[in-house]
Image 1 (tube, each protein chain N blue to C red):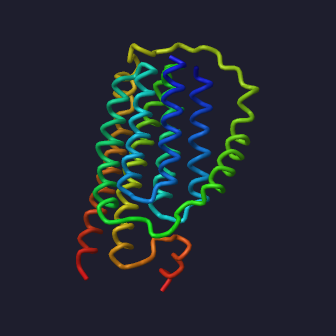
Image 2 (image 1 turned 90 degrees about the vertical axis):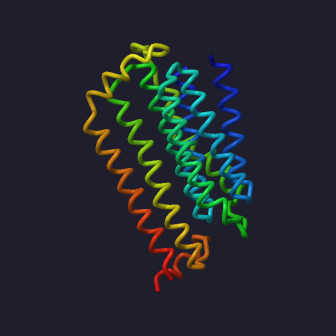
Length: 98
Length: 155
């Protein structure tokens, strides 16, 4: 069973990485990162369940904390960009250099 | 157990595909909530109900609500945001490259704590300082975002 969980975690990691590479929208990239973190939490819980390594639990909480923190910060950034009438197409972010 | 896991995995992959195809952010937020819910159900299948509920609270209660309120209330993607063909090809190549070494691994059965929840209370007390640091990290991010929101409000 743990093999299936790890394979599925790797699938989520791959989709997330490919999503970051192939998307242009800031929020879709943010959601891709969330998908990567969901895959990481799944692999962590698989090891916690099957090998009872208690040291994995802080890793799991760290994953959740990183997920929550980056959403909070990136959505603030998104609101800033949306309010300032910047394009949300990240290929046009070079406009921000001024 | 394997059958339920496969059903959840299929549904989760469908939800993830919908995230990259849909254009309305309200629907995308709902699909992301579906991904989180199905992931929590997998935790439940593995016999970790406490962690499943914690994940449900953090990811759906916090993150999805924040995304729906912060983003979906205001926007709709006006351009094709994802190259779906590129996404599919890149996912398959990355998956093949990362998962290939797995076929040589042999997983020995450890000491499972499935369906017992044992180990959770021990590790929580053992790593309490780390959890405090994590809590401070989230608090700092939330506080900083409030300051940012206030600044955005001013012209």
